[in-house]
Image (cartoon, rainbow, N blue to C red; front, side, top):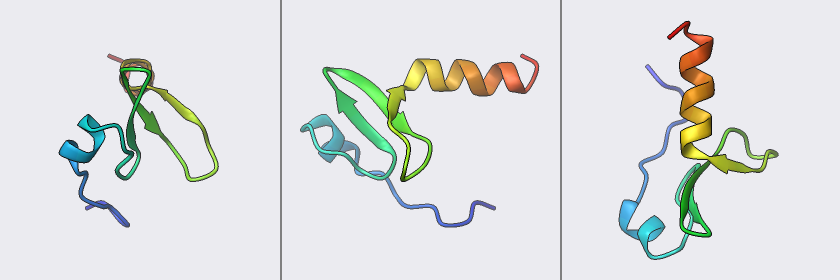
Amino acid sequence: MHVGWTEIDVAAVDAGAASGPLALIDGVPSVKWSAAGGYMPLTAYLDERLSLMGR
Protein backbone atom coordinates (compact mmCIF):
# COMPACT_ATOMS: atom_id res chain seq x y z
CA MET A 1 0.00 0.00 0.00
CA HIS A 2 1.24 3.49 -0.86
CA VAL A 3 0.10 6.38 1.30
CA GLY A 4 -0.64 9.72 -0.33
CA TRP A 5 -0.19 8.58 -3.92
CA THR A 6 -1.61 10.50 -6.86
CA GLU A 7 -2.31 9.39 -10.40
CA ILE A 8 0.20 10.71 -12.93
CA ASP A 9 -1.20 12.43 -16.02
CA VAL A 10 1.24 11.13 -18.63
CA ALA A 11 -0.31 13.29 -21.37
CA ALA A 12 0.31 16.41 -19.27
CA VAL A 13 3.94 15.43 -18.70
CA ASP A 14 4.35 14.74 -22.43
CA ALA A 15 2.96 18.23 -23.11
CA GLY A 16 5.59 19.79 -20.82
CA ALA A 17 3.69 20.08 -17.52
CA ALA A 18 4.52 18.33 -14.27
CA SER A 19 2.14 15.74 -12.83
CA GLY A 20 2.75 14.49 -9.33
CA PRO A 21 6.49 13.83 -8.95
CA LEU A 22 7.10 13.43 -12.70
CA ALA A 23 8.11 16.12 -15.22
CA LEU A 24 9.90 16.39 -18.52
CA ILE A 25 12.94 18.64 -17.89
CA ASP A 26 14.80 19.63 -21.07
CA GLY A 27 13.37 16.51 -22.72
CA VAL A 28 14.52 14.22 -19.89
CA PRO A 29 11.93 12.35 -17.79
CA SER A 30 12.65 13.52 -14.24
CA VAL A 31 11.28 12.78 -10.80
CA LYS A 32 11.04 14.77 -7.57
CA TRP A 33 11.47 12.63 -4.44
CA SER A 34 9.93 15.19 -2.05
CA ALA A 35 7.98 18.45 -2.25
CA ALA A 36 11.05 20.36 -1.02
CA GLY A 37 13.52 18.56 -3.28
CA GLY A 38 14.58 19.26 -6.83
CA TYR A 39 14.10 17.10 -9.90
CA MET A 40 16.58 14.40 -10.87
CA PRO A 41 16.65 12.32 -14.07
CA LEU A 42 14.36 9.32 -13.75
CA THR A 43 17.10 6.90 -14.82
CA ALA A 44 19.42 8.15 -12.05
CA TYR A 45 16.59 7.88 -9.52
CA LEU A 46 15.80 4.30 -10.56
CA ASP A 47 19.49 3.32 -10.56
CA GLU A 48 19.82 4.65 -7.01
CA ARG A 49 16.69 2.85 -5.80
CA LEU A 50 17.83 -0.43 -7.37
CA SER A 51 21.32 -0.12 -5.83
CA LEU A 52 19.73 0.37 -2.41
CA MET A 53 17.86 -2.88 -2.97
CA GLY A 54 21.15 -4.63 -3.74
CA ARG A 55 20.49 -5.13 -7.44
